[in-house]
Image 1: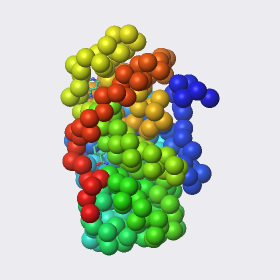
Image 2: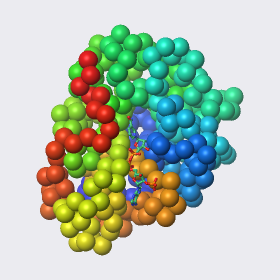
Image 3: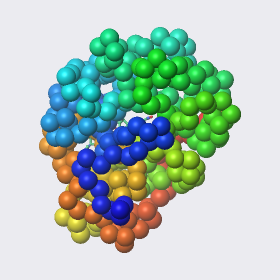
Image 4: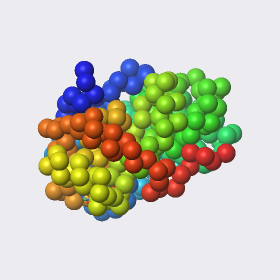
Amino acid sequence: MSTKTIRADQTILLNNGEKIPQLGFGVYQSPPEVTTKTVTSALEAGYKHIDSAYWYFNEKEVGEAVGEKRDSIFLTTKLGQAEKIEEHLYDSVSKIDPRENGYVNLFLIHSPSAGPEKRKEQWAALENLVKQGKAKTIGVSNYGVKHLEQMEDYAKIKPAVNQIELHPWCQQPSIVSYCQARNIALEAYSPLVQGTKASDPTLSKVAEETGKSWAQVLIRWSLQRGFIPLPKSDTKERIIANRDVFDFELSDAQMEALNGLDKDEHVCLNHTELP
Ligand SMILES: NC(=O)c1ccc[n+]([C@@H]2O[C@H](COP(=O)([O-])OP(=O)(O)OC[C@H]3O[C@@H](n4cnc5c(N)ncnc54)[C@H](OP(=O)(O)O)[C@@H]3O)[C@@H](O)[C@H]2O)c1
């Protein structure tokens, strides 16, 4: 299959045999009072994968929007604490899926910032969560190569995912190569560069050539690179438009033009170099 042929219901096979819908939907900075409406719009538009986190303070609202559709929607959350780890993990699961047998599809360590010893503890707690049936898959976020290499010494379960900032201006090639060589799926956060590149000339040219918006071009670039993009929007029209990316493809020349924009430019704090 050409990497250009991507179906709207495309999934990626993770290294533990679970499947993840390739196009996700992020809810960072979605205020809890609008998240239920936002996620309801996203589900109506056809998204099957929602990315939340303890620190987004909207896990409960995500769960409420998903409601009875729970078993057909892929839900991710993230551990952001280094103390009372187990308590926080169970708290997140019960917010996002309050059923007695509730679970999270993907639980990530939000950042390597807790330091090497705590990271080990966090991972062991996540492995335990898998044993308890409360997380189907576990992974990490904002991990650099060094953090992933350290995991090789202690992880009984290999991380299935690394969620990092990825867009044409921030392509993190060494982390991407490391993960691809080890079958660790790459989730692309801030795939729209938080709207800061809307008038970039190269992006505008590709948008004009394809008759698509700059946002649709960026999401399509991410999909064609094999990433799992997580665009965020609280605006219904944008939520719908951001999923309308399966009726066109970027040519090799257009991909190359976008690939040429890498400047290691981050819109979020870069944690991948932390000790
Ligand atoms: N693991 C981590 O540390 C981490 C860090 C950052 C992000 N993430 C994840 O990645 C997701 C996405 O990243 P992000 O929230 O930083 O930013 P993003 O998706 O790159 O950009 C979101 C911004 O773009 C605007 N937008 C969305 N669609 C648009 C469109 N079609 N036209 C014009 N503007 C549009 C949104 O505005 P409106 O909402 O007002 O429509 C919002 O201001 C997050 O929600 C989160 O799930 C993870």
